[in-house]
Length: 375
Image 1 (cartoon, rainbow, N blue to C red):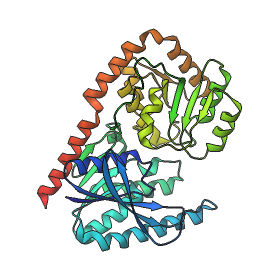
Image 2: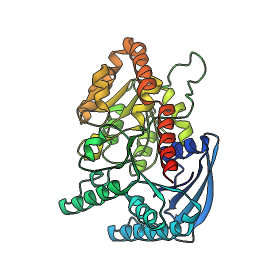
Image 3: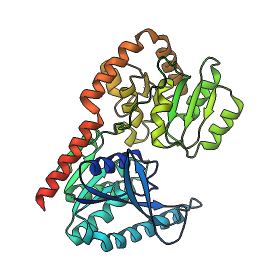
């Protein structure tokens, strides 16, 4: 099938869309991507990225995103949505299916699919109404809008079993779970190489992930060290810590292909989502799957998505959502070094049996085989 993916970002650092798109190409589908270049307000441009040995054509829609005021930010999104709609109308004759990621592209994807009689796959990375604490009326509107898209899409994808509860009440025609499992080869480094630092964090430097608390805890312990990679609101704060503390290293933005290498050189990984954000209670963190594939000790916050697996398997640490809780969790894991090898084997076996990307690729293949048979 000829499939076009829709996403409201620059694609390059979006591991999930790159994994899904490249996996479909590998099994014979013709895939292209529409992204958003939010830094320029000019005409659209065609580009290309390579991922896992696959070349993926990308068409970037341009609508400069302003952070100065909420009104300007909303207007930027409106311009993007309008540009996306008209571009889809132009190219829909050449495609068979639209793969829309999140509500930001789901509504326009649904409208274009219905007008042009194409198949729609609606892929929920994050349930929109629960991404932040919206006012009640606005939250209810977004909630109903997303349910509307789910009920009318040909197939809906969620990223964890827990999210079934989040979309309870919908009537999806076909519902699939595609976990955020890693797909790139594991880089263990030279044989016998020991981890270079205590903790690794690679991801968004955003609020509600306990980054200030985590960095402060590491800075207080001379024997601990930490490597951080990513970009976002806390970038300047992390840079300041790294310049003042020899045990904290900041790499900035790195390609997804470097993630496994960074994490392989750490003793402990963390996925510290704040459960005050409802979406975090249903999260499917990349770090969870990366830790399980590597067999690395993992620290998660109590009540967040996938943390129940740590409790179920008695591995890593599930901690209270506080600085003291994070500190206690690191100390607990460090005190249990003698069990790391045993626990790591349990995690690796669980990953292979439950979460491997090979299984996710087979699910994607079945989704599009079903859609193709309906044409």
